[in-house]
Each structure stands twice: as structure tokens, then as C-alpha cells.
Picture 1 (spheres, rainbow, N blue to C red):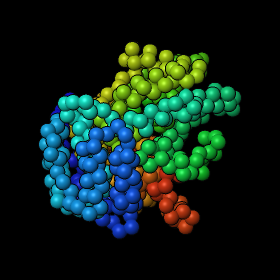
Picture 2 (picture 1 turned 90 degrees about the vertical axis):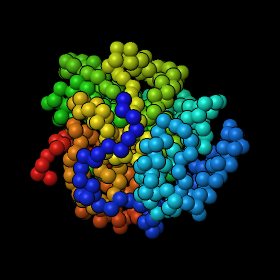
Picture 3 (picture 1 turned 60 degrees about the horizontal axis):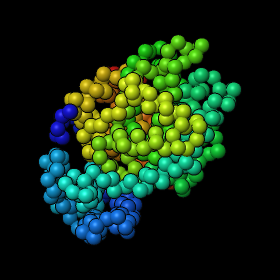
Length: 421
């Protein structure tokens, strides 16, 4: 694996609209720093497991965000030089006047410095958000949700094979609502049945993805995860389905092998790391018969290498996918298909910018090396690929529709690299 560095962009950055910024008056980006991130820091301060010096550091960061100047990293860590380089334009400025995606990623990197994640000692590689993740893995939480999804798919005799395919991918998509840094499902709830979410799905290319899988041999699929807990549990159910040996109607599985890309370190609050995937399998084994069988199949896939867990330093950084380093680019290009999960991966794919929402999805993602689909609930402003009449209607009925997580999109670019866009 390469070392953290600033790769050369694979697009002309002048073709991007202005980046979303925390200085945008009245913006969701600004409110995130002033409210949500303050709450995250306050919750960490109040947690009984942090040393007093760490609690003071968290309080100091809270004050810095609201009234101070952005400070540089001071610790000696493997990625310190990278962060100093990428953050150089913003050090000394106000947190409330910088690009939003950079600010969010740097916020979480500063938390790791304060909690001594990279330093030798008792706190080394201790996930500061682990207690929140653990609550999601109780038998009546994520495992029960997965068992219900699997049971519904198995019992609904009206579901054709293409419908079951869509069922699991849609379930994975709506799992993105359960984000522990911004758990919109607690605010909006969820429909009793997946099919009841159809009106909230503003763009749905799953049928086109199904056709792609029917006509193309997908030997390797890269699945880029987002959050641990319920979302990752539903991701693993979708992965199991894609790897499952088909019966009479189909001679081979949809996918020969899957590489599940995860974060190498804590990021945001609930982003998934390899240990979160393994802990989810442990939780499946303790929950019920359906999830126990699911865990056994997935562990068998891990043994045979049909399922592989992988990390890369790129993921917990402010770099966009058009700034992928060469080795990650090559990993993507070696796959036949990619699934990008979650709001942040969507933002990184299109560029976290003030896009016209009616811009075709294929244009900002034209650089991507292989066909892919992005499965995301809307929890930030960056958005493309909608119809003008949709945007107009939503603006009239729900002022927060871009950011409140109620809606979602499944958008695919099945012909990346087109020059006629």
C-alpha cells in the first residue's frame, strides 16, 4: 500500500462548481459544525471512559470550532505530514469559513489526536465511538432487522429473481439512514415494508444494474462500506445474497468474489472498520437462527477468499474519488463493478460541491474507472441526477429534503469514461 500523499487529480478541478463550505450562510454545513459536531464532542467529554486530559482537549476543540482558529496536528503519527500538507491552506482560519468536507474529516482526525489513538499506551487503537457501535449489535437491533429482511424476501412468493436482487440492494440503501453521527431514522422512522419507501427513492437505477449483472460476468466486485451497526449488517446480508450459489434458474452466483473496503481507523462516528465487520458476524451468531446461518456462510467466504476485507489510508481523508492514489485506482480498475455506500461516498464521487441537482449523474462521475452504483440517503446538499419537476415539487413541500435523510437515490454510471458528456 502507498503512503498518505496528495495525488494528482484525475479531472480538471476547474470543471467543479464551488465547493460546499462552512461559510455558506444558513447552510447545513455551517449548522453541522455549530450544532451536531458540538453535541458529538460534548457526548465524548461526558463519557466516563476518557482521561481528564482528553476531556479537556475535547472541550478546547469545541471552543476552537465556535470562536477560535484552526490548529495544526501536533502529534507524531503515520499520517501527520499528509494532514499538514492537505490542511495548510486552512490552518489559522475559522472553522466557519472552510470547505465542508475537509472540515468534517479534519474534525474527526483531531478527535483521534486528542484521544491518543495513534500513540503508544493504553489508548492506542481504541475506538472512541465503540460503545455507540456496540448498542447497534444487540440481538433486537441490527441482527433482528437483518433477519426480518431475509425472511420477507424468502417468504414473498410474488418476488421474481430481479425483485429479490433489488430487495437486498434497497435494504442496504435504506440502512444508510442509521448513521450514529446523524441518525435520521430516529427522527423519521422507517416504513413497515421496503416497498413503502418507493416514493422516497428519488432516482432508482437498480433495474439497470440488474440488467448489467445479467449480461456481464462480474468476477470481482468492490463494495465500499459506510457505517457500522445496522447499515453494515444490511450490507453483509446483500453481500451474502450476491455471493450465494444460484439454484435452477441461474448456474452461477451474481458475483464470484467481493472485496469489502472498510476504514483503517475510526472516522465520523460509526464508520465501519474490519473489526466492526467481524464483531457484526459475532453478533449474528448470538442473535437468531437466520443470522447465525448468515454468519456461517460469510465466515466460509472469508476462509475461501470469496470475501476479503481491505482497508486503505485514502478512506479517512478529505480526498475525493477523483483524487484516488494510483494503488487504490488500480484496485478499483481490477474489479468488474463497484458499490459505493452512503452519503459521504456519494459526496466524494461527485465532488462535494454546489451542483445543479438536474446535472446528469454520469458527468461528475465520468472519471470513475469501472461501472458502479451509489446507494445513498440524502444527508447533505451535494446531489445530481434528478428531474427539474422533482426538485421543484420537493422545494415546495420540504425545505430540508436534501439533508434530512428521508429520501434516497440509487444512481449508476454503467459506462464511465464516456467523452460525449
